[in-house]
Image (cartoon, rainbow, N blue to C red; front, side, top):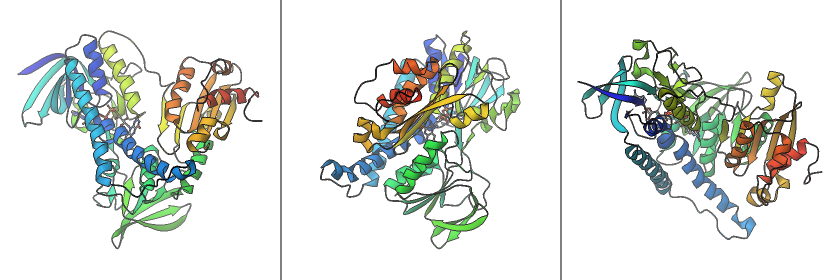
Length: 465
Ligand code: FAD
């Protein structure tokens, strides 16, 4: 028997569960299908567990600098089981929270894997072994992504090679770790394991780490990470992974010179691929590009009444984007008409110090031929930053030469990922330098430096000559 409902959501990650709740708020009878765990990648093997490990790493780092502040403690070591237990407890609490929210909103959750058998009709292979057929007026696909395995000889099936999911549950921090990929995930896990005493080497094929971030601040971050003992190779292409005694050995081509590196583990962090194979998209003609579902600005797929959001689009793979698109898709499915705009999307990297950016980078502005100016304020001139981390980092504001509107803000420094919200709001409201300057910022805070960067742009900075 085919069960009928008004809205089906496939996937219970930050895209899917948010879409389901928003749909229920708007009066839909919602069924959510999840094949693994509610919370998806983000809560279970992504954003939250990485930040839990990084927080533990930050405590270690703070303790090791405590003497500078007159505090007589030093991290004597760590209890890894407890580090993982704390991470697990936070994850469980959040997953429990999502479960509760779905219940309160009367969203029916089915544990199983969904695949299309006709437009808006799905077969669900349930965890209990049974199969159920469901149909709905509207369907939102939020199937997410999984780690991509690059076609490097020796990676697939190699027990020394781990992906980000495995890296979050290792029995112990390895003595040495080679990280293939200098993107966000590689940089964050490199930061965490470095703090736990692992000898870390990052190997990145491109000339620059973190391709979407401001180049100048990325170079500063690279120097800071190298100072902590992390070896970083760029323009370095991994040719193969093999063995050397008990360790893994990777062959790398660094600007034309071949070199071998050994390590206990190799973290493969070269990106993620969409998890859409089981859905049988071709059966109902949903347009996709090698599994990346194509949608318009209203999150509509090529098949009427079917929407797609989040990582399964293969574009901006971030939890906050999946959630925003989830709200939009639910609203559009239920009679509204709102379009997606990524203009205020912040990119955050939870290194030590943190790194965050929103809007245009200098590289992007140059590429687009936009006439821009820059205000750059170093954090050694900011009291709160000086107290927090010795004043390491800077804030850069890019503005349009004609109207003085804020085009981009890039922050390397303590709590950068919290501070970027102000910048996103400024860009969303098309604020000018003057409007940021006219906003009173509390003292002492690191956010004062956002205003100072705007003052610097206007050549009237108070706290730097
Ligand atoms: P997912 O979270 O992947 O959820 C999709 C869900 O759909 C999964 O639970 C899956 O089991 C289910 N599913 C798939 N196919 C089916 C099917 N056929 N039937 C039923 N269920 C199905 N983003 C940030 O914004 N900030 C961060 O700090 C951050 N850190 C990250 C760190 C790591 C290590 C990783 C790996 C990712 C990180 N991300 C971060 C990215 C973030 O996790 C994803 O962008 C986000 O989870 C995407 O949400 P989603 O709902 O689109 O997909």
